Length: 381
Ligand code: SF4
Ligand code: SF4
Image 1 (cartoon, rainbow, N blue to C red):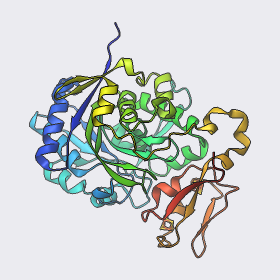
Image 2 (cartoon, helix red, strand yellow):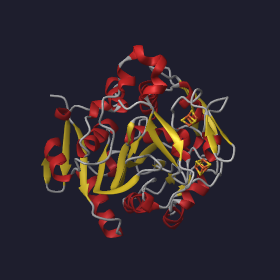
Image 3 (spheres, rainbow, N blue to C red):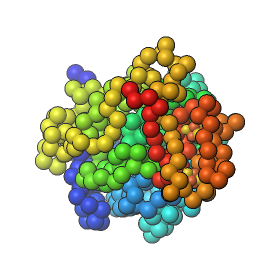
């Protein structure tokens, strides 16, 4: 019989050090301990979600308490070759973002060194089904294994940003924008994400879902308590459990569909085993006990990924970003983050869109530090 993908589900009611340490220890124990994933002398990279400058209570980035607990657990178990980093889309740079998000201080305290995210290297991945070339941050390439410390959040393009999508942060700096310009729809983008996951194969994924984000994620949504940490070696199984917890069909998430199809992991409930401190749970039981059916995420049928014939009018079917002038501080970050050669927005008195150019990649919405962007559908569908 095929071995099931194990997902450890730990209840953690807040970011108090003792609670998070306990949850991480329980999760590691349930999955067989760190020695199941790493040799002691290996160089391990902790990769939090450092999307942009945001304090931890905004739920944009991986909470420092989770980062710290994982680092502490590894150190206590004899793993001393620890690094951390992520490549934010924000031009202010990885180090400043890590400091603003509260990750830098606990890293320094624990002797976890910053990996090199200031340069990237072009790599080939011949097995890629959609993409065979990636520009990857050197800090990622120089480590032996990755622990993916992702955040439980919604995402405008892919519905959720969980374990699989968080790996996109391995792509060096503004090269991420080039992928958004190349893969303009949720499906093709998810195919590239599946290839990237197959190339990098993080050894362990840990999702901070204590304070999650619902609504207008991944940058401007609303924090919501979910009180869980999820851990797995299978990012698709982990994201599938996340979907069940928020009453979203896993197959509606393109990163799940292509992750499954391309062999990254499984989104089949019958192939997933949920381990908790109180014993095994079925995925339905876990959803009932630990989930939130009203979590604000888009559950409609995504017509743009299903009706190829409608591609020429896709921009009309997709949500479009717009500016909340009362929040905008005219910083121009959104303009710089637009990946198109001829940008689809420019800074006049306020940023102004040319929707005829806009490919609806939502980079501008992701990067706005003021939550000054909202989404709306051109047509209600
Ligand atoms: S919308 Fe956001 S990112 Fe763009 S100029 Fe205004 S505050 Fe800056
Ligand atoms: S304007 Fe925003 S959503 Fe449109 S292409 Fe540029 S970054 Fe993407």
